[in-house]
Length: 185
Ligand code: GDP
Image (cartoon, rainbow, N blue to C red; front, side, top):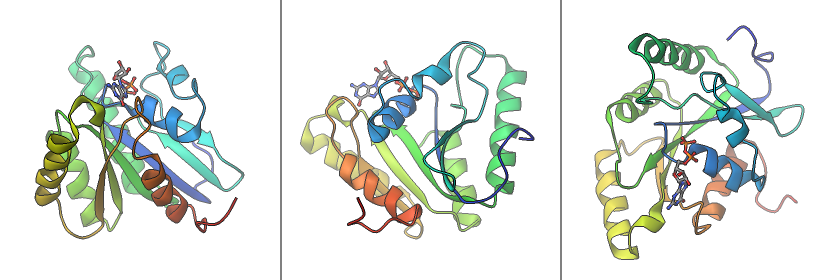
């Protein structure tokens, strides 16, 4: 936390269980194929990685939670870091929460959504790897998950980095949080 840049401007954080497709989504949304995967170099996975869009605006890649191969104490440390970042960071404008469409709303996802809504922090959910389902079942899952969510401050959509679906919808949310108008170039 003490190595983060000054708490100024606007940050949008990407969170999700390990393997949810977070790195792929960051790369897809930024149009840069290697950006977030670089942060997965062994030994760096526990860090918060920041990607500067300009002097005022940053994408924040939070450590993936629930990674099976790490010890309980490392997991606890990640959760502490996440918790501290989310609770204290004033420039945090919103959270993009990634959930694999086949495994939505696991325990920590629910905790994060609960925390965010209690803190008045908007959350936009990407149901990732939506290409794994045919369109009908994908939409049914979207509707079923939506029913479980608070109505206020939480939005959700289908997303696939592989098929490049849902990009415009996600970019529109990012633009809004970063204060871009839709016709800005
Ligand atoms: P992270 O751990 O959350 O950063 O997840 P990654 O982006 O590294 O993706 C985890 C795995 O899911 C990798 O094997 C990816 O190739 C795969 N994956 C990511 N996005 C998609 C997607 O949109 N569709 C499919 N079918 N697989 C994906």
